[in-house]
Length: 247
Image (cartoon, rainbow, N blue to C red; front, top):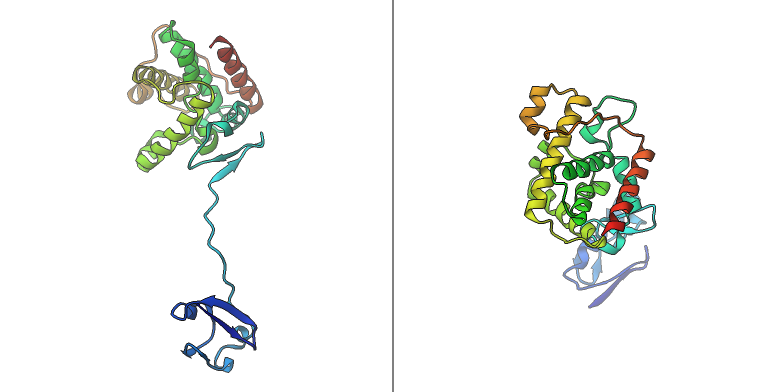
């Protein structure tokens, strides 16, 4: 290792001779010969090039609870229900393209999906009803994306969403991986809720909504009024607390 220096600009760096060219603004003939600064533009002759240390891009989200969630490697300890409720209450379904004075939030959607699951399967275990309430919880940090866009993003998005979902389940005492039958039930309820949203809020005709989302569940009636974000958040936390008490 050789320490190289230039008295005119006080530039100093320790590097092997084979590497130090890229760190200096000077023209070099040999390891010990720095050619005159006059060959350089005036703006560069007195200003040494700064050597900066590479840093990884930030991959965490600071929450209002004070938690700092690593988005690439989420830890259950950094997840709080108040953060989830706040985030979901401010994320609009259908990219905000819905009727009414307020966007239809993911928080309100989750409340309805959990209710539909109970309608379809009244004896559904409380833990699985809690999974239904939290089925879109990862969207509190990644946002809601319409299904066609999720499909276009492919496996990387699904893998990221799955890791975050597992951390959320672990945080609240649920199985990390959702059982297949429960996942199928929640998906059915999710499509049913989407049917009501599509016809009442998003401008779909009944036939069009049935084509994309299937038949609504028999005997289930729903009249949707989008809630203000604060009301949706409060309702979400209240239902969560109710289910946690029953576990």
